[in-house]
Amino acid sequence: MSGASPDPAISRLRAALDRLETVVERRARLASAQIDAEAEFAIMQDDRARLAVELDAALDAQRALAEANSAAMERITRAAGTIERWIGRANG
Image (tube, rainbow, N blue to C red; front, side, top):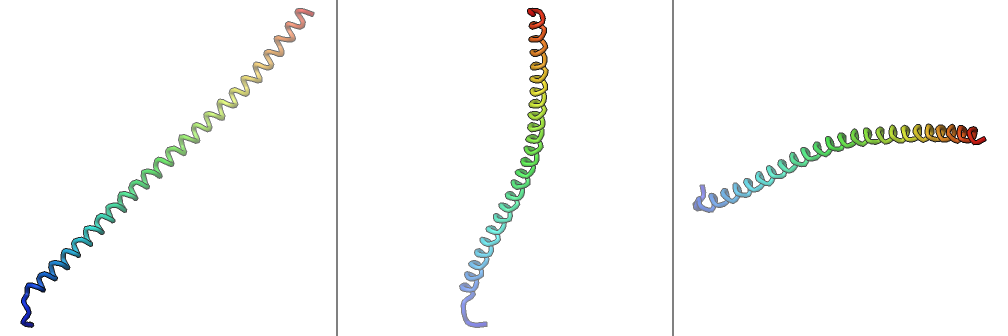
């Protein structure tokens, strides 16, 4: 051993341990943030899938309504034509 006092060595050891603790805390925060980001991403994917299903259902309902509207308009047009013919025969 050298004749140097142990105090500077202990000070360097404490400083090194403080730096190590800081690095470990920083990495723990980053790992936690990564886990939080992955969880948030999974939630967003679930929401996206649910919204896609809801959108498909809404589009199907809209198509069905459009088809029902078209069929109703055809029936109304035929009924109006029939009524006009009856009125024409009655007046004729």
